[in-house]
Amino acid sequence: MTINDVGADEADQAAGLRNLISMRRSERPLRVIATTSGKGGVGKTTVACNLAALAARQGHKVLMVDADLGLANVEIVLGVKPRYTLADVLEKDMAMNDVLSRGPEGIRILSAGNGLQHLTQLTEQQKMRLIAAFDPLADAFDTMIVDTGSGIGDNVLFFASAAQEVLLVISAEPTSLTDAYATVKVLSQQAGVRSFHVLVNPAANEVAARDVFQKLTGVTRRFLSASVSYLGFVPYDEHVHRAVMAQRPLVDVFPSAPASRALEHIFRRLFDRALPPTVDGGLKFMWQRVLRDANPPAAGL
Image 1 (spheres, rainbow, N blue to C red):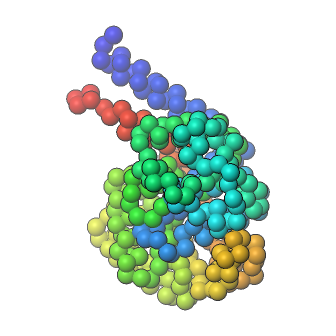
Image 2: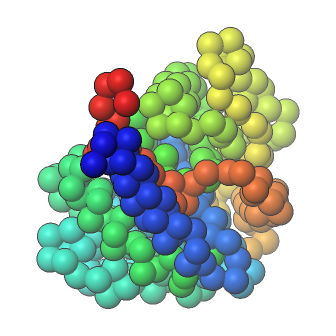
Image 3: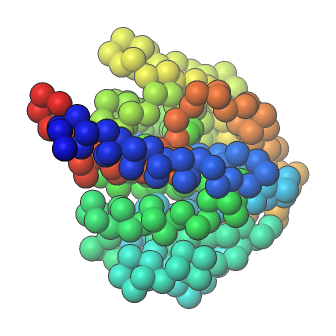
């Protein structure tokens, strides 16, 4: 067998794995959206959970993945007490479907677990095991919202690179803008993320939100090739805090609140956009990335 034959076999195997994921879909093509932020405290998880609730309300089959491993907040915002977590998948070989919790509006939730420091940086073997565990779910959901941790850690890169769309939540604070720029830089250069939707949270009004967005794009346009687009803003609204304290989605408990209406507008703008037919991402892209990282091409081949 020649070197070219070996390379062809590996390419066939990789193509087979990619096709396995892309062929097993529900009625709607699987849409994977990652929410992230440069720093904590900007409402990223609240936004993610409410978008999940809105999607489920519209009939989407939603899987909410808490990817802030070891520091689970999704279950708190949604008022769920999971019996199992992602650690049970990775360490006890439990089936993914058996560890999912059921949340508001029928959302299925994969908990990240709390106080699990050893999961804050997944090994390549754990990443492979996680992706394999997701495989049986590929035809059970049409929407996956992945709430990554904040910052530019390895887990953030891994989960964000799996998404077709990345929603970056920022605030007007200088630290948020500085860290958001760093996030765009690292995710675009190291994780292959080519475009970002930006949501400002909170903002006094549209003018203030766009001013914050312009401050970010003022530097990204000069130094980065990634596409950064404005998606909208969430206004200052005391109902947000009250919903978090009640551990219920804002759009469910206070549907007429200004922040709820803003999130509904953001949801429509996001979900009314059809994915380009050539877009990479989803579980298919997770396979591609892990295979590439685990088996880098030999020099000269």
